[in-house]
Image (cartoon, rainbow, N blue to C red):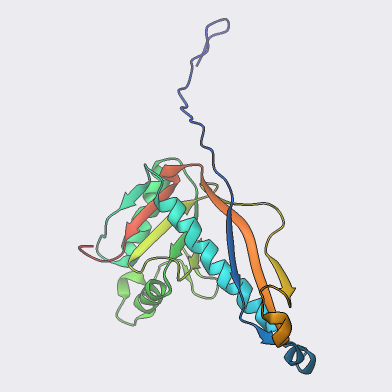
Length: 215
């Protein structure tokens, strides 16, 4: 409490300026005969979907690499089981004043947790707030990605990490003259690209957990 007329206290909220730039993430398709597109009206959409998927995986890797390079992240050592370890990571976030936003797991780790929780012998987990269809633990969404390292988890607070882009999103362009030979060989090639970066606004809003004992 501050009495009327008294000097208000100053809270020390240290900030530093961090400059970054968007990274171009891109890849090309192989050359595809032009007549194949004429014979199959769904081929272009199939290739576009595959290219977008590949780009999304690369962006996920970029985000995790950026997050892991930040100093001052929280950590959670393995404790009893994968489920217990993740629960303790939530406590670490909440103790630091953050609201949990998501778990990030490798598909194999999520499988282990699902099978553990669903096991007839897992009596200690029978009352666990677990929604396999919605992929939630204790009401917190679970994001599964192959960009995550197996045996490692990231528990993210709301607003702790953001994905930056130029607003154009993912662009796919098609060309018959991307090199010296495509035109003469009647080939069409696609380029899929976007510009992305990641910002970590609250390092203590990221808890890196070890899901394997002794790792």
